[in-house]
Structures are given as C-alpha cells and as structure tokens.
Image (cartoon, rainbow, N blue to C red; front, side, top):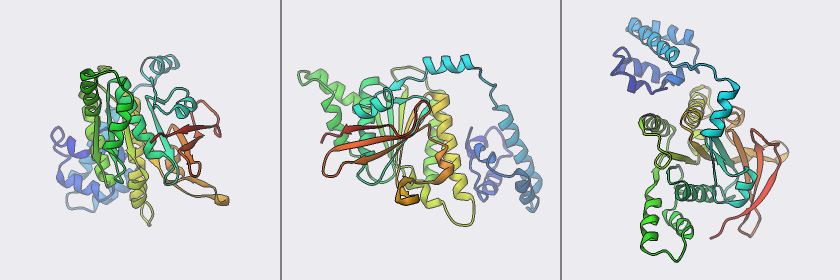
Length: 321
C-alpha cells in the first residue's frame, strides 16, 4: 500500500489538509489506517471545521484498502511460490549459512541481535558483498549509526576474485561495488519514506533475475525505533508496527531478503534479549543472537526463532580481518 501523499493526484480528497489531520494522529500511509480505531478517528474528524471533507477522505482510504485485498492462496500455490521464487542467498559466512540451511531466504526478514562488537555489522557487510558478487543483483544498505565501511566492502569483494584475473577482474570489481547502494538514515520517518519509494521502484521494475534487487540491509533498525517508543501515547508503537508490516510486505511481494540488526537489553535473570519488545518479536521470520568469543575473531550465532527449525541451535563462524 501507499503513503497518503502519493495518492493525492488520483484522489483529490486526500489533500494537504487531510494528510495533516492524519499525520497529527500518527497516520502517514494506507497501512497506518489498519492500526487505528476508525470510530475514534471519525469522532476527531467531526470536531474539525472541515469534518465533511475529512470523513470523505477516510471513506476514500477505506475504499482503497478494500480494493487492494488479495485472494487467499492455497497450499499448492504457496509451495510453488517457495520453490520457484523464494531462493536461498549465501551470506559468505559459512557458519551462518550452515545454520540457516544455505543462507538468507528471499521472502523472509532475518534479524541479527546482539550486543556491541558481536559481529552484526560485519555479517551485514559480508552478506551485502557476497550477494552482490554471487547473484549479480542489487543490494541496498541503509545505515543508521555510521557503521558502513566502503573500504571493508571493497576488501571483502576483492577477496572473492581470483588473483590471476587482470582487467576483467577490475571491471567485475567495479560492477559489484556499483550494485551496492548505500544511504544514511537517522530517523524513522526517513526510513518509512525510503521504504515506500523502494516499493514503487520494485513495483515498476522489470523482473530480471540479473538486475533485480536481492537484499535490503538495515543496520540497525533498533536505532531508529527505540527513540520513538515509550511515553504515554501509542504513536511510537504505531510507527514500529507500520515499519514492520511494510518490510514484511516488501519481502513477500517482491521476493526480497531483508536483513536487519537489533541491539540487546537485559531480560529476566540477567539474560540478554533482543530489544523492541514483544510486538516487534512477531515481525522477523528468523532471529539470530550473535556473540563474540573474548579476544578472538570467532563468533557464535544462536537461533532464537525460525520457521522450520527449533530454537537453541548454535554455530560458530569466523570473521576475517
């Protein structure tokens, strides 16, 4: 679904006044309507001088939602989609690929949780480099805390080529680096705007296996969501849910693989757990907890959540300098 601003051209009733009214209630996209009590929203609209136009706008958005409902899929259709469209993408980290039965799956959102220096960013950089090199598609890397390193990306990519290749290597090296797109993001509103723009781009692109986007990385998602949570209102919670639903929509409809990182907080008995609470816990399809063995470049990945394996399974992996 779409941000409200993008609908104004086709639906004039969704004008700047209506968008401002919605924004004051934490509604920025069509999806956000699904998270609000519409009876309460209509009651607020009736108190405004332009109540008639606002209620017409609400009715229009509900009509758009109804028109975009998709028919149910049967078991055979889901199986065929999984077999034909939801491929597994190797991250280049042997332990993680082994743990995930091959790597990151398209159509799934995978979360890497862990404390600082647990390897989250390094796995993201490794996965971005390896997937751009091996699958000849594009990768988008959204950096929320200045963790991206172009030098590190270049080093990883250079290790993937045979040292005997000369000019062909140089052209291929440049081609791989050019297929990794980077952008800094420092607030949740910018992230939502980028994701909506990405959805428009994916919707219109030619579905070529060689050119289409394979991976979206957000390092880290918790750096954007945590600041808007808390307080007495539900605005921050709605923004978090809207972000999660939009990411799941992207992975499902466009066969993307999304990799996000999350920090950890103290839990019961002093045991660390991923941040962002119980609501966010339902968003990722796969959750891995990363840790680092003291004084070494050896790391551990433990399954916290997976659609086809029990939690608790752990594998070691090495991140080379």
